[in-house]
Length: 491
Image (cartoon, rainbow, N blue to C red; front, side, top):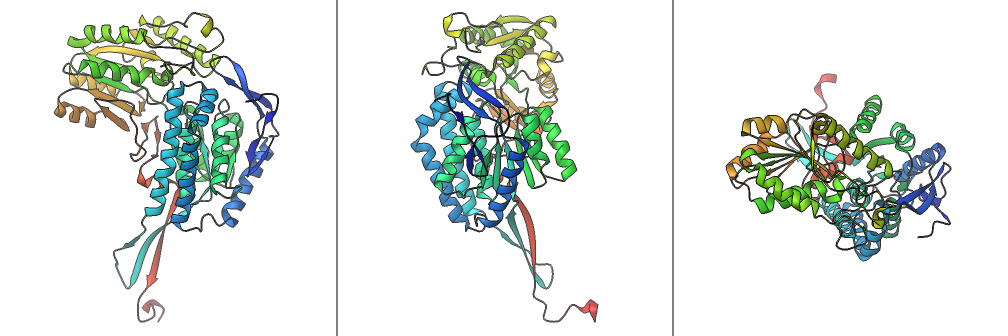
């Protein structure tokens, strides 16, 4: 990809340079620019949203039969699959994830469009039970212009999870990708238009969230915001939404507990815990970053876990063998290093990691070794604050009552994991732990057919699932009078 020419952005279906500041999108493995672009100006934001509203009202997309919209969404899925390898390589450059992971993200995006094509085509409206001389119906209408504000850790998959149901419902969509990962949203919008989404129905407005995201959220024509990102930003969006009386979906932070009981299958549990925290370099909202292990098993489990963590292959994202790539930016790596220092100041000890890898292959990129901290208490800041990186805090527990109390002692409640051979204990813990998703004898597995979201500071609302399309629709009731005589009141 050439960096000599500025990359245009999509403003209301028109590809052109933004009117804001110029900046570079950097490849985290080398720190080199892979694209240069200009962020949109506030005038660009207003124009994109105004064009989206016009397209929503005049393009006929919302009025197409559900199966007609579904056909276009299926074409989007087909194009993504046809260009899968090229998109995966572009995604690798966008955020530095290992190539095998970016292939999975691209595959997930295609599956998401296919799923919501089916959801769109099969969504049923209802005739509700009559309670008088009238027939009652419940139907659904698109909202208009909705905003999808997406994170940098899994761009194309996160964007698909918002854009596909929003388009399926008949809405126009303004995508605000993370400032540091603009490439995949632009690719996705181009594919959608190629597949048949009318021009103007999609815009892509990369840039600083505090400027561009704020302007989008406050715009009076934006009828809904779906946001994935940090809790502080999510709360800010919620305040704006409250002033507008606007619905939002907020998928926010996490400090997810993984619980290994004394009877757990060690091979499965060790591999599952490693995958849960260190895949994606720990840059995942559902990362299993708090580990609780039965005291009788703790020493053996931690020996095996630490040995395998130290052996994980950190390196070039283009290498098929790489398990952990770089972190997203130098600034983010510094933040993680400060968290490790915080843990040490609270009395933690480093079991493994805690350093940058050495060698010329790592000199320019933002790499960090998988890190495990011990000697901590669940009340410590290192156990309560989201790090969003490859740092695991490990603690033994003595009984299941204290385990549940500690697992639930967090402002976050996004995900959790349970490892045990006892299905009754698994059921009891799975129901007792407070989290939007609980994995039992597995971790970090996803299905587009299953709703996803969190409690408390981990957010509100749900994405995915067959009824996820309804997040982007308004429900309307229709009454059909069947009375033979005029209403008696006026007589």
